[in-house]
Length: 240
Image (tube, rainbow, N blue to C red; front, side):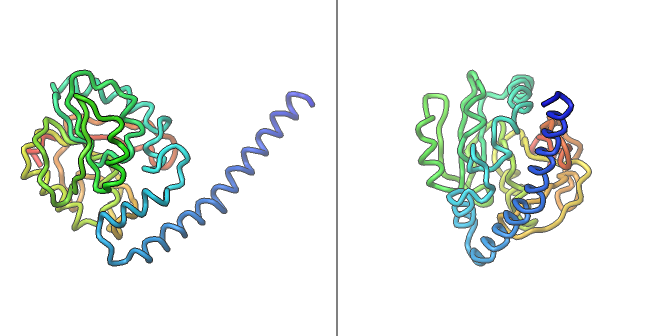
């Protein structure tokens, strides 16, 4: 087989895979998610996110927390985050939700006291194998539990799964805490839409209903395609 024929064959294979994913896998996964949410109608936050985690609803082979928690998806973020923490003199960090700690465990947090928290007890229990003098894992509900004192709270891929009402309650809960900085998932320029608990959509935290001021820092997650504006943005909690 010539090089030209080989290139043509690879291009055809890639087209077939992309077509299969877009025509079959994506719609099927969306159907699964819709029906899972119907079956969980009336369930509380813990039950919904426990079901998502245990069933691997997002279908990622590396992390049950979803593709966004894979090492590939966080490749750029894992380089940029330590520099930001150093710049703002962060010594204690609350990661809520920490999920299955898949990507964060590859970051050298040096002398930062890290608390990984999640609403699902089973996730927290499994994460205890990573606990040490610098890291601990606890069960917390971002919406209503008292948050431990920290220099910074990381809220990655969380508000994007919450309806507006619960997302605003989570923001209020952060504002009444003693946390100094909020680092959260932010899609600048996206149109905000309300969703049922546990679904997903991009959120621009500077738009309604949040109306955050311009962030102090923005770390692009450097993703290709439709959600290339996905980022982590930093605010002083007192400015929210």
